[in-house]
Image (cartoon, rainbow, N blue to C red; front, side, top):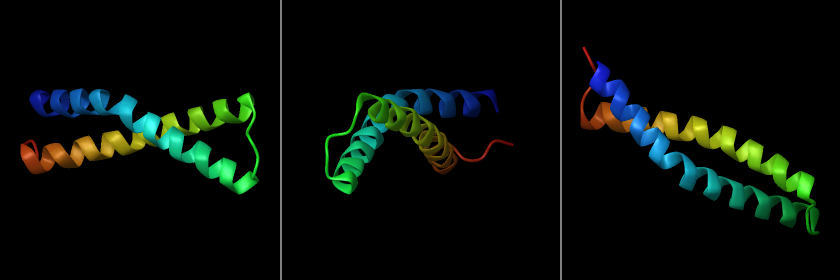
Amino acid sequence: MLYFIFSVSILAVLLFLPVSKLVWILSVRRLQRKLKREISEAEINGQLARARFIAMIIVILFSLFFNINFIGFPK
């Protein structure tokens, strides 16, 4: 059980930065297209906070499902 939790945590931590950066870039570009203007620094920081929250959910779920498939559900 401890091995499973450790592997889920490690994979989630390793994936967090690239996934949050990807989500952030996509959300900033989408907002710029929607507003048809350059967005302010405050709006960029808001998108960064939103991207980090979304990325945290994505990487935890992905890591959990990946490890269940790869290692198996702990008993």
